[in-house]
Image 1 (cartoon, helix red, strand yellow):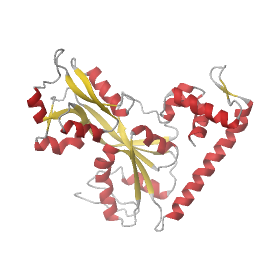
Image 2 (tube, rainbow, N blue to C red):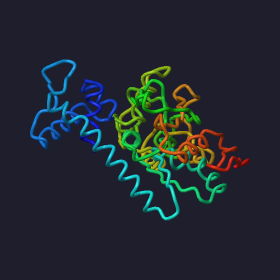
Image 3 (cartoon, one colour):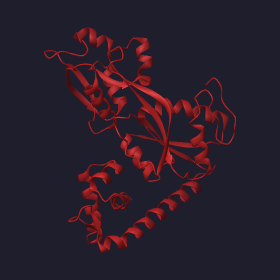
Image 4 (cartoon, rainbow, N blue to C red):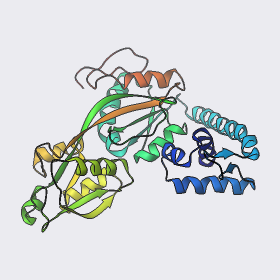
Length: 313
């Protein structure tokens, strides 16, 4: 499926760089996968000597076949999933771990209370994989962070979006560790602060890199630990291993209880949007109803198909 979708995306963009961005993989990974498809077919599909890249005759012949194969596989998968669920349609939502366990949980809970027949499955992973799950048709909806300086790369002609909330990335550290180690934000050349960082290729890694580059002054940091997931970074932060930028909603209880301390007065924090994405054309009425329900405020979320609202949740 990935090989076929890579090939179709490359044909649409006629650029390895643009196709890699839309597929949320590196250009070298895209090139390897296209080459693997060509090896499997035992013939070149792409004329790499021309710019923009062009399909070979074999590529032109294979293109409609690839599209039919993807459509057929997706239809078969959906039919099997629907028949495997004894009580009806299961709506599928992709979301990063930090959103799935905080924001999305608060939005889905009142929907379940209002509609006992509602079934949803949440696929929780990193942002890049969540994008793939949506673009491949594995999921009906995607909920993720949006930060203007970091482009997401989803084609607006294929996917619609709407902002449904906000979140702030804030610098924090364990209060006890700060006192014991004498940490002073934003650090000094002779005493840089240990940074609990995100994978530089991850979405939150790009957000933190932009914050560091656009802040009011100079940060003095030394990387100590790197992880792709905010929950893992939070765990290291609570353990006193260093400072970190974390979603405020994720750490608000720890801040209120004094386990973590906020390191700035707002100058080194940035607001992100929480965005809801879906294909331009909904899979069915159930997906469209959930799309609409998730846009409503948490205190007034209507369950799909009920037209009612939940007040005070």
